[in-house]
Image (cartoon, rainbow, N blue to C red; front, side, top):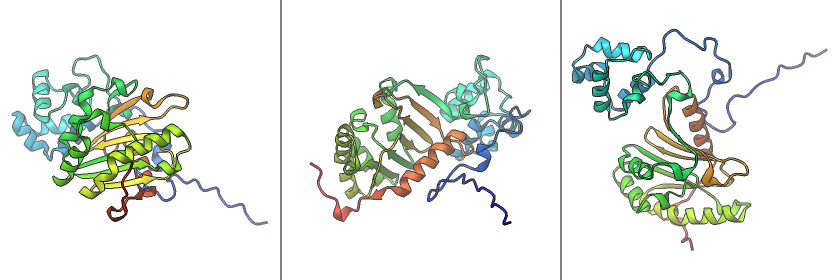
Amino acid sequence: MASTPATTFHDTPAGAHSHLSPADLRPPTNPRPATRCNERLRETLLSLGESPADFASKLGVDPKTVERWIGNADRTPYPRIAYQAARLLDVDVTYLWPRIHGTRISKIDGTDELTACWPGRAAVPPNLWARLLTDAQQRIVIMGDLALADLVPNLPRLLADKARQGVHVRVIVADPNTATDGIDKIRAMQAEAVYLPLVEHGISVSRYPGPMATTILMVDNDLIIRTGIDGCPAAFAPVIHLRALTNGPLSRLYLTSLDSITETAIPVPPATMQAVA
């Protein structure tokens, strides 16, 4: 009798580049490691191109001290040094050392990436959107309809200026022709009216032929994410702010979603772009 072939489990979505790995689906073998790396400090230094030795020199401490801070998340500097380090890196001191005041506990999980969470778009600080886009140095990716044109004054001009400065700008909008709901169709057409003209400014604009349950704004290493909830208006869906970390479980999850949507979306070529009424 022929043997039954073993069942194959596919961890990676077909046709999509995944930031996930089979290890992400397995329970941790050691959920409470003795030593935890300070991923926030390490990634912040990497994003600024700072070596531990250079940063130590600016702080006036031994390079091995900075290396110990990075290697052990439970090691917290003296408050004076911690605040000086945070000012140099332009981040909040509790982002680097959550236990600096003894009231917050650092964990090696998605909370290392979590910067903030709001119960709906209206609760997001109004200046956050414009500040992130204005400060962008490398990339801006807009996936889905966040109604940014209502939140950021002169959004098309800002994106066009950033593209001219060398920032890679990509926009993915829903295709109104595939919308199954009248409201979704109107929103998709409104988004096209904002973003499609940007193709002529060298900005990559694509249409996604289907619904997008998640909306993502990625600016450099910041991720602003809104995940839809069935039966709940989009305006009331929770919004989370992540600092993308190389090994962050939430970062890998949402970046995989972004890559999957990007590969399926259909680019809008400049030569065939039509005016949107």
